[in-house]
Amino acid sequence: MPTAFDQTLIAIDALHAEDPRSTTLADGTSMPQELAYAQRMSDWLDRVHDAPVEVLRLAVRAQHLQRWLVPREEYPEGRVGYLTWRRDQGKRAGDTTAQLMRDAGYADEDAIRAATIIGKKGLGRDPDVQALEDCACLVFLENYFADFSRKIEHDHMVRIVQMTWRKMSPRAHALALKLPMSDASLALVKEALGAE
Image (cartoon, rainbow, N blue to C red; front, side, top):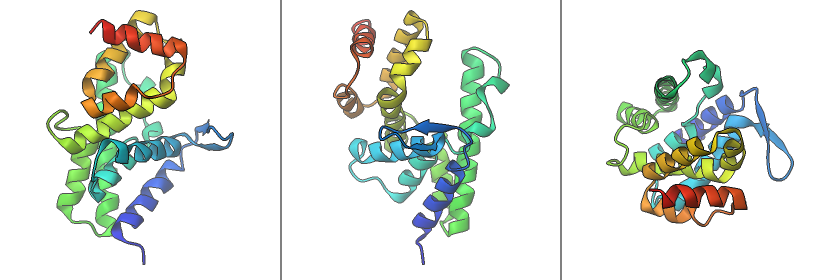
């Protein structure tokens, strides 16, 4: 019989697999976009945290849970609209994850803790929330940064790199600086960090 952790992880990944959008992986295969994102988040966790507990592992895996259900376009343009969308997404993903955990037999306090981590409450003070944020920043820099930077105006992109960097721990900074990057991406990061 699967453990509560395995049962919850399977349920989370089943929801990720419903994402109608797909992404092409490095090996040329296709995968639902949010399932690929979730796996990338989990892959980074052991590098940013020495001993992640089950609740943190589930929170990291579920951070973008069913994000496609509420598109960004349904919120106003600009920073306030973006932050409101992101906050609402975090609450919804946290609530859904907490329910999946309860269904699998986790205690209510563990379910609430996972929802708190997903909602990023305590960033900079809570090491588990920091670990989730570090994973998210590293996944962005490793997998999405180059394409994203080609679509965004240069000075705005510099500010995005600076804001991303401020949210990361020193350990994540060291990992980020070892990522393979194109010359253009590396130049952008150096400019952003030099202007800090």
